[in-house]
Length: 169
Image (cartoon, rainbow, N blue to C red; front, side, top):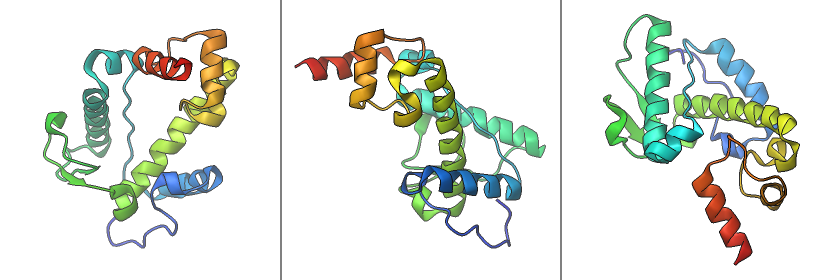
């Protein structure tokens, strides 16, 4: 986000905002941002390396993309939460950063909107799981969809096994 500019009112932890408010802020953030890049990890990467390692890889991808867009490597990186030993780049970790740090809050909102849009698209493609309403979390509707329709290539097998086993016991 640009320095020396007034912060966009309402930016905070994306989980504290309604979907329409996140969408509104997302438009403002994208219009004001000096640069923006997203990174993701696939279900296969999460299964292969675990969620922590996959998250670090996704962050590294976003950082590399942002550096390429800006035409220079980034010299200061802020991350939400604890330090990520395997990130491979110097960074400053801020616990609760999405609510305490403007740039991290902006990133949180942009990432959540992108994820919500992806889940809505998947929800249309796979209606049994109600992804457009539960964003992939193990809600009763999602678990019912798993039992009725089985797994898709988008499900994390280890999570689904645990969720379904807990539901049966």
